Length: 317
Image (tube, rainbow, N blue to C red):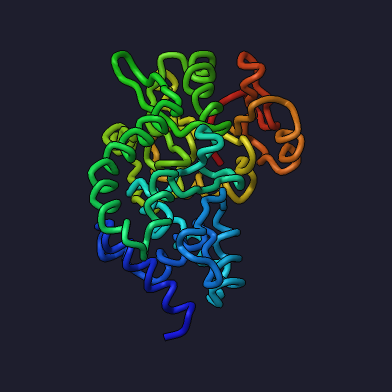
């Protein structure tokens, strides 16, 4: 067994003793832990640290220090099947420097929880056997506390009387909230919310029965717009993309949505929503599809209409 294999084996032993499910007892997760402890083979466990690292930095550590060269397209797997579970176990903290950071931000980072770091530094010493049971006794409480802290950073959105949903914090969710609370009030008054997506949870709210009553069935793999509203008075389905950083209703997206909702008995209205008329809007305005609408949360009573024969309405061939 090489020194690198031995170090990975030690990390796996720790994860096993911490009671992680067998699905997480793998080399990939062990390497993630070692990267976040900044623990190459020339350091002892007592020298472990807990830097803030993103997925890119974890991949770099694996390649440079442990001779494991993960392909770029494995980033999602590492985040979803290793790092995410270490966070759930309370071993890692997600964005401890800024808990309200958007889930899809490129600045997302992770850090070994301080109490866990103290424990890991004792691995291989006489103190390990005493420290481990004490840590396991308190770990659920630590995990719950951090989960509650994350929940406090979420954005509450009222959807109808007596009901509310919460979205992951961030600019994208702020914009979705504005769409529901302001766009709907001005341009779909009395309308019904059909669907709301979220960066942290794809199907945050979905009135599937209502959508099916309008002739549309969407599978779990359907690429839904960020918000769908139903204007019963005019029999319109309003399909809205919230663009805080990317994703306007351009020609390709217009075609995708047209195909996804092609069986709708309600007319289709396409809207791209921006936070304001600033940099993001200027970046994407040239690719917004014709015969669609643009709305800015900063000017909620106004719409920008992209050509066509009528203002805010569905188009039929």
